[in-house]
Image (cartoon, rainbow, N blue to C red; front, side, top):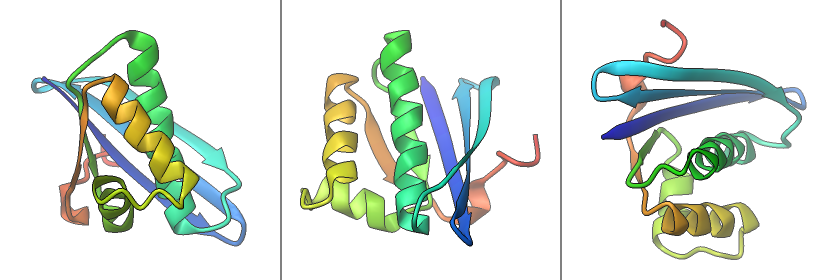
Length: 113
């Protein structure tokens, strides 16, 4: 089972994105990148999209995305598709047969590893 933990931050027009991929108990990938998103919600969505694009490229299925963005999880799961990011995340989840779950911030080991 593959799990991906995502996190991002936004400040003064700049965003920092992190995701961490686990296969069982083994870390198999960690990625950090800088972006220019216009809000923290947009930054969170961008991180999830990049992680799911990687899942699609690798041909993985059944991945669980863990995020602390309750807004994104709610928007995707409740079809709030006036937001193009939520629409795209829902599409990527569907084609990869994956799932997205909310986790509080205490679960993150992204920056510590």
